Image (cartoon, rainbow, N blue to C red; front, side, top):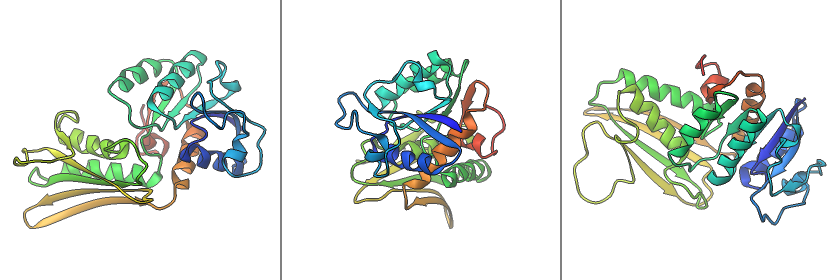
Length: 269
């Protein structure tokens, strides 16, 4: 069995991953880490996730040896996520980063770590989203520039970051396919007066109710439209995808990877 350490074990995604690991004969959870000061510190991760005890208690510190894990899965907060990256790098343990809301520092930190360990960055671990991202890349490259690109993302009222990491990843795929700059040519939260800039990619965010995650990419020209979308109705799909990614990553050489690598849509790091 593959030994997994989980960072962010008490959050919604963390609890879902605990349940998936408990039901998977190929995995065993060896550590569960929460933010310092968590009310769940000392509680069994299984109990936190609403299942039977697993013999692993939640801790507020990332163990330097990562409890002898073979791979680490991170669904926490940006500051704890970067700490996990440092610890994994020092311990030479592969890391799946599912945490979103990072600033521009993440890419440089991942690039440095990926020289020595396998790192998979996935703002969305759904298999369907990975396929949608590839379809967006193909459509953006194939459709003429008069097909303008707009992205809409919808999530539950408690989601903190906007736009979602998935929306930004979809925008990046479209931008790079068209030779655009994802930082300069992607425009989140359009408001006020002013005409649409040529070639820009817009992102609109919705936060309401208990929406798990809905993303739609629209390619619109005069007289016709093409839409590529994905809707998640159960958070367990992300947990299953994260565990699948972890099992795959545990056997990889150093480098930066994505869900496209896990699914065989991309063959190189």
